[in-house]
Length: 317
Image: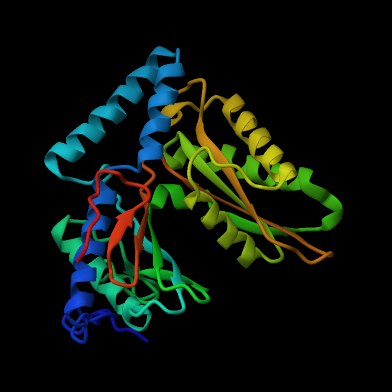
């Protein structure tokens, strides 16, 4: 158990055992975290531009203009696009032969500490029950790291995601009776979005997960919001569900920041895995208009490139 004066992760201990290459990797990832907090992904910017161009409501147009002015000032002043920079999450797809896999967890923690100081990022990590802010954006189980091992590969893909408080509020998972069918899953998603979607600063990117248990559905939903905007599920029926949900949520008329408008979502992404015949688990999560997620790829020599942010320069360490 942690006392109120105890820091879960000691800053002085993190990174002490890293070699020169690994420390350089920390610098790159920390810089990427900072970059993604300040500049939105290319596909998010393009989608917001598209939505702004198709809007006709005067108030919605004014809000879009404010969003783009916000993005301009964030880059000019080198400040995050939103003050709530969330709790750092990493989704790692790492080759089994990637030479730095053994130290990668420490690298990611050290990167969070460095980015928190350098950007700076707001301190958002509070230890539950002890109820104190750790002051460095790390804590028990934070940053959250989800691993996927890729047999035989020697590269590593790191997905970064900043989950702010507002866009976490609509998140929920449940397990339905299979007899209720997919219409019940649609009702569940619509109920959550129409109840809590306004808190998440629309236009939203909605992630829907379907799977065997509430846990797998929730992870699928999280993977869904990491997918590129405009991508579609390979399953034809799932792709139809994405389109139907997008049209249905847009029809509600939230508009940007919930002030009314033609479109309320940047898209709806569905990720599904197999399920038990006696259950139908479904989950929903959302990304806000300031959807700060990034994808960084390292090869075995630690050359890197970003697949989400073209303004982030790649090269060799």
